[in-house]
Length: 350
Image (cartoon, rainbow, N blue to C red; front, side, top):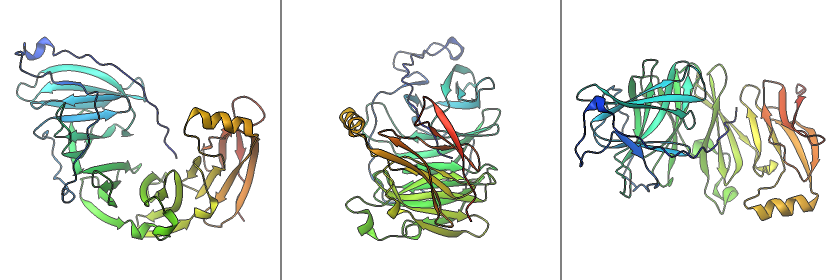
């Protein structure tokens, strides 16, 4: 299902506790917030897959969770565990590598990461120094129930989706500027098992995406972990949706360019049904005000990727729907007649 994103601005002021001794004036604290967003220079190629290890890499690392940036200095390691009281938060503890003594612990929002059972997956930015202009690489780590971390993979550009059974992890691997991209699958130990180029995942030539370049995006896994979904897009609009069966590694491409989806949609990854509307894109407040005055009719559809059949679910006047699948047949969306949300049970395609 689609993943919601939210930003929680947090000002963290963290002092090095006495358990690690009193640091000298020139000694950095174990971690701190970073307020600048670094740019990344283009390396010549992808860093090869790393041998999984529980030892932290040398150099400074940064963890960026929406609204929060934490720098972990050399000589310290992090332990990350799920918050047993709140599934939307994690606990991060920092300790000295040399002494093993804890420095401090904080709890953080569980965004920009994935949790599977008692495991937590997240990406560290490695080689970043506050005030510098670049980060060297990104590293995907898995933390178990005890908080012990294992490095699984590294690349200049990296985003990921973990299968429900954790057998495979889908990676979008790229150079820092996104000039080239590839879809790579690794196993639970971090070993590459399959790879697909952008050309293998698009049903179009570059003219369809023009003037914007075709870009790769990850969607999600089916509930049984056997099928992975993603899409190629130009701007916010998907042009090709692809499905990969991990039993055979066969790829199915679905051309959705003719649907002209402006921006709001949700794919049911278990039934191959796409809910979307023709609500226009709005970038600034003036766009929203003009849309409200327009009294434009907006239609919510469900499109079956396998059969090509399309259903009209609802219509509204100058309102968007924000559709979201609750299960295989139930679609939730903004109620055009009343305040709040409503649901619709989608009929089976014939």
